Length: 111
Length: 115
Image (tube, rainbow over all chains, first blue to last red; front, top):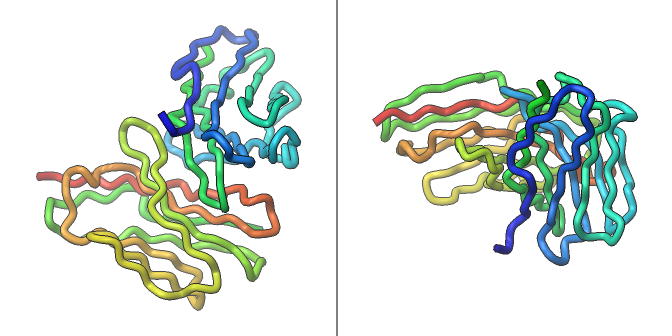
């Protein structure tokens, strides 16, 4: 498929566990974004990459959140020592010329 | 500060009715973009339209139309002759050209179209 893919689609974690969420952007898209969408809310910006450079991480809620994109393609969002308030859908988007294409998201539930 | 307000939390209509979803935005920038996205029950955000701040022309695409008015900082979305398949959550969003193109979303309007 030519769209943005994310894995896993669903993740259940016990409080305190570490999780890693993967995003495969559309081939050739330089920009990549991560958003967090809590239940009943709009997506909220977490972080932004241009190729492998993380240019904006102002939306990451705490130092437990870490994102990387080492080769300028696939990106991983890692959450350490998960808390219940981390439960949300995590959306990845890649963009070309200001139009962002979103993946299906990963629904994270922290018990 | 940048902000997007969608005051309508939920709207219910009967098929074939017209419906307008409101969006009001705040920004200090003169160059910005406005968007509408559709989020069906499957969860994936579907791009509908992008408008830049210098283009106030209204746009029509099939049953969809958008009314951009800078004077009232609004970017409203109208669906004509609604269909059941239009049922979804609709998000209005803003990005500022100087600000890495990150999107600032409203809280969304859930549209339910009944047969």
